[in-house]
Image (cartoon, rainbow, N blue to C red; front, side):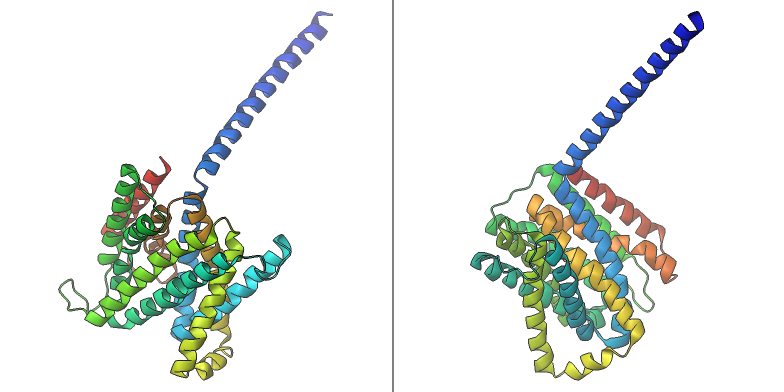
Length: 332
């Protein structure tokens, strides 16, 4: 009887330990879920930064082969196809037929401002001042979006969040400004037109994200993205018609390597990237979302080192660490 009693005692002790372990894991998972739910907007913005890093590398490769205008119109068409298939399954509608007039007007306007005006002038600035200086100017987008959100949406920021924005912007500036480019020095005279184009790009991105938040008004983020992309496709179609570049677009389909890159970029850019950006501004302030998304130029340093074999300096690493620290302030 004693050995059997010992076995039962040991088994009861083991059951108690397992129960305690189960309760602890359950408590920890609930705690983590509460934390994730409390910061869903910030995590969505962080995902956007990762998505845009992938799409930037893909679009850079494609643009070198078929040109930026062709890439822009093709990425939007592909993104629209991806997201339409998703909404057909998840919402039972292939297009946003249930959107209100408010949704259509303001989301379409945000698509024109952000995806057409912003992206078009950003791409125009690249050959004039280079992508490094263009992206440096684009770090103005987060504070600009916070200013626009203050006047348009009546949003406010806590002191620690403002500090996080400043830290992220400084980190990005350090990482990009010190990126070595052959033949360029800090004292180089930059094209005033290039700087103006990049600044317009920053304004377009900042105002576009704020208009998106105002236009959604509780509407589905993925369906909202459809409206933005539809408006952007119309906008780029007008530009291509005006510049008479449709022949260039049609011949681009023959370049298979470029098409693969555009497809990859469209999946992570117009599809996941833009959709998650709207999800982000739905659950957090536009200034916070825009700031977290703006760490893409820093995140791209690692794949640039691995894929393009570019040299990454200690100063760039310091800028990356500083930016990540700034993002962390939004989660406190």
